[in-house]
Amino acid sequence: MSKRRLVITALFIEEQTVAEVGARYGVHRSWVYRLKARYETEGEAAFEPRSRRAHRSPAAISDTTVELIVRLRKQLTESGLDAGPDTIAWHLTHHHHLTVSVSTIARTLARQALAGPEPKKRPKASYIRFVAEQPNECWQSDLTHYPLADGTDVEIITWLDDHSRYALHVSAHATITADIVVDTFHKAAAQHGYPASTLTD
Image (cartoon, rainbow, N blue to C red; front, side):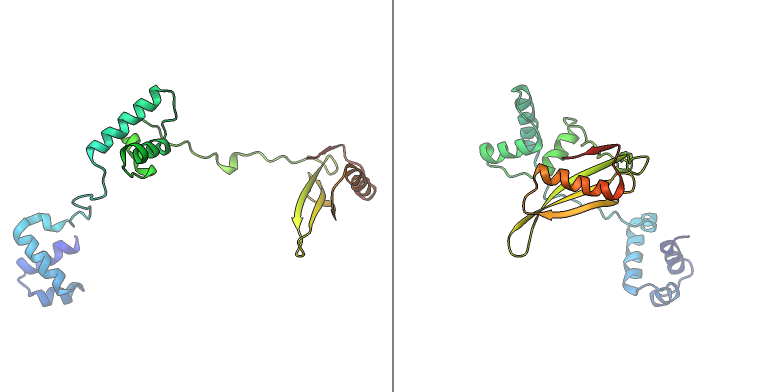
């Protein structure tokens, strides 16, 4: 049984006072008085809480604005132009002196069945990460630009084993040249053995 029904029963059938009912059920007397008044005017509707939904929506756009959005969508589509919410918002602002948010326009288009929902992003779990089956099966080389504290830029070259993700070689240079790439590759290969293949930028 709901607390509202228990309170009403205690008040009207058991004829307890508001103070007694409040103490018995651990509720404030003002709430008991409001519930009692509601039961006296509305009857059994008092057993259910009132809707918290707003009675009106002052920020809602007018029907004429909805019609204008629909008309603009149709005109832009027929002209072969972009007819998305951003474009419609621009036309409303510049040609009709109305400011309507892009999200409101998108909701309006969806309600009018003029736009489908945005496609969902692909889940990260669906991506298949490339991983080499064996050590030294494939190495990757990557070049990174990095600014130092004194303002000079350096370029960092990294050779990475695709199987273990182990950094086989990392070195910084003022500028990376083809000779440096070849030299660092041979240094890493001398230490770890030559790979079956490489991937470079």
